[in-house]
Amino acid sequence: MTLKCKYKSLLFPFIFTIICFSCELGDSPSEEDLGELPNEWVVEKVLIDGIEDNATNYSNFLLSFFQDESYDLRDIYGDIEEGSWTVTNESQLILTPNQGESREYIIVNLEENQLILLLKDEHFKETESTFEYTLVPD
Image 1 (cartoon, one colour):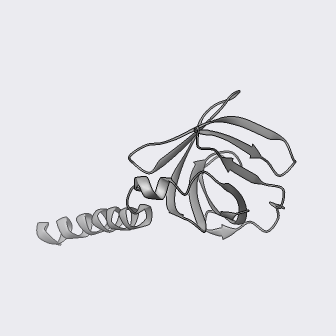
Image 2 (image 1 turned 90 degrees about the vertical axis):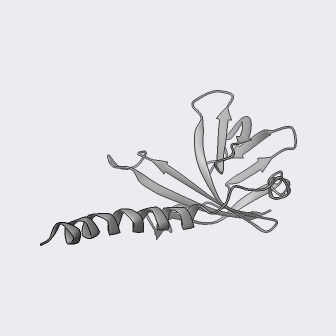
Image 3 (image 1 turned 135 degrees about the vertical axis):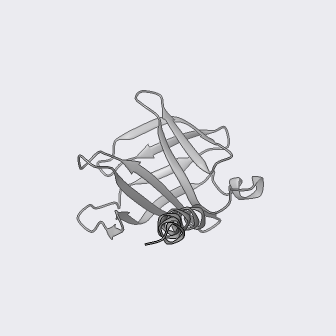
C-alpha cells in the first residue's frame, strides 16, 4: 500500500467521526431557544446506547426549570432534587444540585414542544454509556 493510500485510509475515519459528531450536536441554542427551557418537562422516551429503555417506568419523572435558573427534578421514585441550572455556549446544560455533584448534559434539541438531552455516564456499566432523554412539556 502506498503512503498516499495509508494516509487516506487513516484520515477518512477521523473526518467521518468529526462530521457525525458535529451533525449530532447541532448549533448552540439561541437566546430565543433558551426561553423555551423554563417549563415542566416529562419523559417521552429514554435511549441507553441507542436502545430504548422499556424496563424503567419514567411516568413519575418531572424536570421543572424556572426563570431564576433553579430547577426541581422529581425522579422515578418520587424523590425531589433541587438545584440550579446553566447553559454554556457549547450547548451544555449543567445541573448543579444543592447537595451532590453537577451533571453535564448536551442539548441536542430545544423547541417549544421537545427537549432532547444527552448524558454520558458510567453509572450502569464499567464502560461509558450514552443516555438520550426525550422530554415533552407536561
